[in-house]
Image (tube, rainbow, N blue to C red; front, side, top):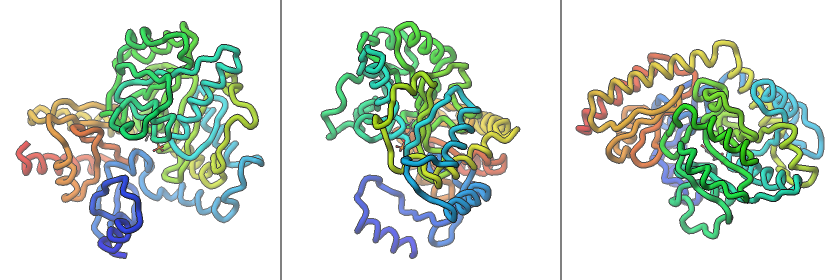
Length: 397
Ligand SMILES: *Cc1c(COP(=O)(O)O)cnc(C)c1O
């Protein structure tokens, strides 16, 4: 199909929830994508932080093909070899020792909310309320949507889950004041993604951790976007030396094969019992084989050093650009999770970049967001920098 045929068929048959660009991408390799007309693009969005190893990494492709020829699905009524290998691999690389698998970020957060509620109920001290942050994003199912601190996502879907409180991000005093004795879970992104790439001040997450310990509240980090190498550490909370009770993962975990995960300690895992939570597709052989191959590559010695080096280079180049352009308010980020805030909506800049063959996206109206595959090199960053400069000139920003 050509681009026009794909777009026409989409408009006829797909429910209109996305507002796509007039672009149909049909093939990818590394940081390159090609559209249905054969035009090449440089991908600095990675399918929203999903294709962290670049498109169609040969080792992930091989793992998917091998598993697809062996066993795709069997259900969690039986033990699943790639699932237990993945859980062991994840456990070897973070604080968590027990895992629940699902298909997406929102489901992982939904599981976190349910686990926290049931954990306190089983302990004999029910604390059903939740605190999350303003400008946060945790997903679109009703529980995770309720925990999302942005009213634009709530509009028309009320009533939401009761007992959810939003506090300003990066403000531990506001959090302390909101802990009312009925709160059993604090859910935070270690770096806010969708809300505009907000990196908390050093010490904030540690202060939250201490407060949660003092008040007997579970702390969950939503690492759906910031996790899996994106910030230059395998998990973003490692930068702060802070360990949560629960961590949620998705986006980059399966390199594009849908998978979400919740990790926690043995103790917190006791909140769930057979029958209390489930997911038909969760942790199936295909998705966990893809995730296992992804984890093997992300944890190869030296891989994250390269992410840190290229991330620092890109951030440095953008900071230099900001000095020459008053329209740039701030450059923020860590590793290859990067936001450039402008004093105006960035939609025209994103379109102009796309016209030059660069794919990136927004994080809220005024923030240009870059989420390149973690395997990009200096030449690709230089190419994007030259394109941004040319586009800013053309737009007169
Ligand atoms: C994308 C995202 C989610 C939701 O993930 P889905 O897979 O779209 O459900 C949740 N939390 C964060 C931080 C995200 O960036």
